[in-house]
Length: 204
Image (cartoon, rainbow, N blue to C red):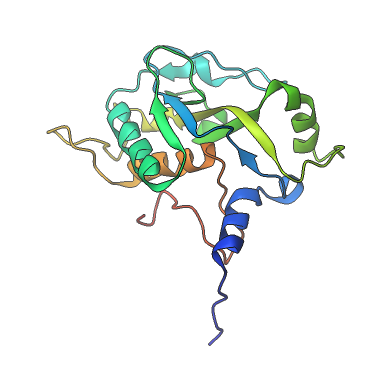
């Protein structure tokens, strides 16, 4: 029987913060400062991508009970990491989480973008074009959007997020939210054989 590889804490941290795959391998994605803000908007949020028109706002849906589950998920991350996560209401935040029926490929995902000063270089780097300098220390993030597929919208979702008494259900829908917040915070899956963020199917 093959012996499973072992990794140091530093190696696992490196994998989870730099392994964005193929041409995007290497640079860190990190938030400046000790506090990251998030919001769960009740109206269509303002979305700014890099050289791309966002399609998700057109299918925006109110959060419903997802808001309760998202707050619980952010609270778990807040307990785990050194950075403080703070909710903003009615004000643009660094991380926005919302439902949409017009996500790309009807998928659920998180997309993060750098500060405006790095926008051009970030775009070239995503395309696999050479960037000078190569930014070995990574990018400071300015904003991140978590889009949950409309198939998970409260009236459609197969797995409820909150029970009839208002308690969060720690099922696949909740784990998906936890997973995508991890991406928004700057974590990737890691390579095969390394530690991974929890996915939507196995338990946390």
